[in-house]
Image 1 (tube, rainbow over the protein chains, first blue to last red):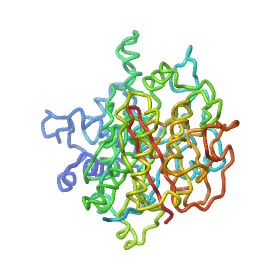
Image 2: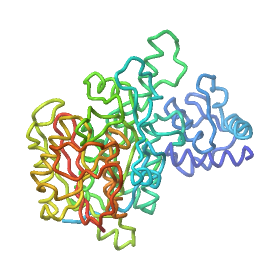
Image 3: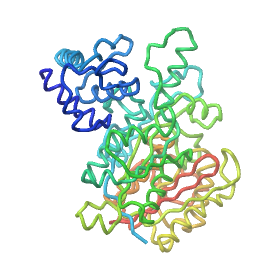
Image 4: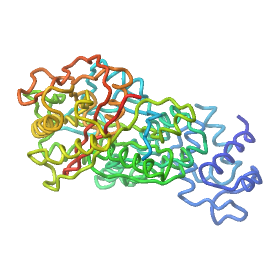
Amino acid sequence: MDPKEVLDELRTILVTRLKFDQRRAADMTLETTLPKGVEGSIGLDSLDFIELSIAIEERFGIVMDESQDLTRHFLSFDTLARFITARTEAA
Amino acid sequence: MRRIAVTGLGVVSPFGVGTKAYWNGLSAGVCAIRPVTLIETEGFRCRIAAEVPNGIGGSLRRSRADRFALAAAREALEDAGLSRVERAEAALVVGAVGGGMLEAEAWYWERYRGSRPPSRPTPRSTLPFAHAEALGNALGLEGPRETVVMACSSGAASVALAADLIADGVVATALAGGVDALTRICFMGFNALKLLCPEPCRPFDRDRRGLSIGEGAAFVVLEDLERARARGARIYATLAGHGMTTDAYHVTAPHPDGEGMVRAMATALERARLAPKAVGYANAHGTATPQNDRIEARAIREVFGPGQLLVSSTKSMIGHTMAAAGALEAVATVLALVHEVVPPTANLETPDPDVAFDCVPRVAREAPVEYAISNSFGFGGQNVTLLFGRA
């Protein structure tokens, strides 16, 4: 799965699980940043990240080890899509 | 008053994921009570339970109980074949007690026994209402939501209360059931109360010595019968009536005369407008504690007369699954009507002479039953009887 396809899946997760407006999700690109407080980000908070992690694990069949620092993977859709792609290929 | 149909079933049990695995185990009389692996039981008088085997699915960030609930609820919804809109309007009623306590206990255990910070995720979804949140969000259930915390009758009470929501016209459809995972507090609590049997429990046996703990989840889709017919749904059974009463007597012991149990069963019959002789099978609460089985058998006799109906206990095979028990046993009762087979009481060797019924020892019985009840009695004297009729 390439990053663009992963982005599409993530958009679906944002709409169905995090209740984002469909049009707003459609406007998101790989460059869009995620964490709350970062310039131009979609403003995800800590609970959103947990919900997002559960949805990613269940959609892509991967396990994200919480004892590792995952922050760098959750900066933007680009870093997240790369992380997911690497994990799914490794699995 | 609207009549209620059962149109979907979903189960996670000590026989694995799925209604099929559950019925295969029950109808073959398999006892799934084995040595405990989930928690440390060194030094306990009882070291066995009926655990759910691996393969439940779902993210490990979710509690074990949430993963049980999701798998069972998803199966029930898919089985009923509800559209997205019908799902969105459905009520969700969840019987729960332990919540995500298993994970919370492990976290605190690590936190206060040295290793710091704990290696596992911080517990969330700990409280009983967390299951309903997980189910609602993951499965698109947007109707009324209730969590029923009524000890060992939670799962049955959730089915009864969901039926009321439909009968009253609040909703046309409801997903109702119960869930509990094994927890230290439950296991240790029952162990301390000396209610756990060191060997697999033997309900209605003269030599019974207490219960075995189990875990799992079950959900049913309940639906306005007319609407279920109109959409061509598969109807497993009708929920013809139910009764809910309270002993108001003691924190753990049932009332010695079983007076609250009698009223629960009598109320279910009354609401269904049925004579006692219409009922052919009672899926008993049947915990295998000396008190419960004696008092329950007496209460059934008072309502239905001696010898009239078959009585069996699902707990002899899957243990006492706590908040899930009433829901798992409701599914067993519905399947008994569907398959015309009464599941047995496993491990029953020497029938208790004080029990005036055929308790279907060890081997399932072919029996075309028109109506069957499922009893659930919780600590604090919380009695629920569900009465199902053949579709």
